[in-house]
Amino acid sequence: MKLIKRPVAYLVALTASFVSLMGGAHAADPWDLDTTFSGDGFAVSTFLSHDIAIQNDGKILIAGRAGSPGTQEGLFALTRLEGNGSVDTAFGGNGTVLTDFLTQGGPFVPEDSAVYGLKIQPDGKILAAGTVHKLDGSTWTEWHIGLARYESDGSLDGGFGDGGRVLSEDIRQEGFDLDLQSDGKILVVGHQILAVGQSDEFFLKRYTPDGAPDGSAFDGEMEFPPAGTTVTDPLDSRAVLVVPGDKVLVAGSSYPNTGFVVLGRFQSDGSPDSAFGTGGSVVTAEFGVQVSNRIPPHVRALAMQSDGRILVGGYFADETAGGGLFLMKFKPDGTIDSSFGTNGTVIRKISDTENFLNDFDMAIQTDDKIVAVATQAAATEGLVDAARYAVLRFLPNGEPDPAFGGDGMAVIGEDTPPIPASDFITATAVALQSDGRIVIDGTGGAVRLVGSTPAAPPSVVCGNGLEQGAEECDDGNVSDGDGCSAACQSESGGTSGDGDGGGGGGGGCSLVPNFS
Image 1 (cartoon, rainbow, N blue to C red):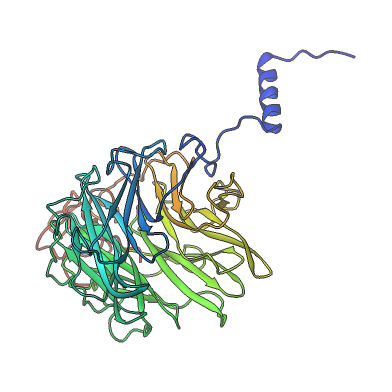
Image 2 (cartoon, rainbow, N blue to C red):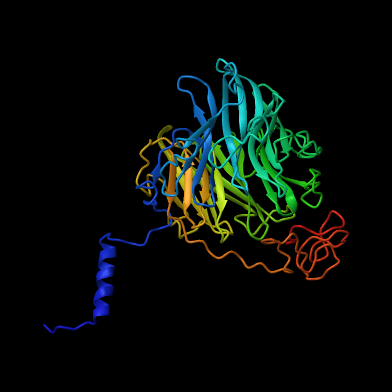
């Protein structure tokens, strides 16, 4: 036999290939558990979480509801983790802060309260918004918006509201999400309860930076969607997003008899933005196969990509066919973006049953890929075998990302080691760290995935018709005197609209790009 000598480089490469084939060390996939997080990728939570926020220093805030065993009672709950997943004991003294609204040191008043929205202010203070229910036994007798602000160490901010808390006076309001305008004013979205057990009216309220009601058009009694639309069912409003120009996007869905997705935009003063949709709102028709047992879609998240296009997402279910998530994409003027998915909509079935599918969240990477979380439940003959966190990633055009789990989805406990907590858990929230790692939370505690190294954000080019970065406007040119300056900053008294001379709503600088 003739021996063939090979160069050393060849032998090294061959050895590496063999190790890879035999299951040796490999480059981490973006859906792999990040074992630098709490040692195995998991951090067990002590309460039901609803939202996550990442601080500039990499610490992770988780907020939700801490229940009292054997009762219906619950309180606002926040915990903070170090970047490595360990509890930050400097936060609140032991890592967790619980806040009541109805007792506040006086005679005990039972309440069932929960945080649904979490925001970190530019100064590092922490805002939490949610719902406070007054209890009579196990029955809710009052519904209030609850808003609390904390110092960075977890103590209540005494300069905000009443000792750090704000409780709406109306007894029929529920709060679900919040965001901040550039002047520090706080927007809370939710709905008004007009009858026990029925959520009837959209609600958007604004507070001053010190927690006082603003008293502007954001008074909680705004008509949305406008009269004359096809929406007659109650509107469940769950998402708010402040966009450039301090305009305000809100999204919700109608139920129980119809499944309309509703999106609206308001000017910074609370008036409807007539340049968006019809009179400031967009009402989409029901989507998917019309099945009598279908549960209408529930909107749960709202986001904006770098080009100003808008994503609305949530979950849907069918008692027979199972359930999954949906995404809808709109142009900045409110028209549907037909280049996304199928005619502007992505529908992804992920579960064999409608059980356990009761929440959804999403986040946008710097390369505009979409990371979404929901719950995947497997069932045999109608009995649920397991419910686990499902993490999905989509390309900007709505296609599943083949670089994530092969088909754009990874199931924690199926494509990764199982979560220690339980086989029956639901995902509620997702956030992206600055290094691209993916943090997920839900009833099984926090999980961190390796994620992907962030791509460079799109270059900001003034005059390209896309409002990006610090631009206040971009009308497609670099001329002064037309409402949008040569530096893409708003001018008073201008008359131009968008870059192609179109657009609606009269004079002034168009604060969003026109893609029509």
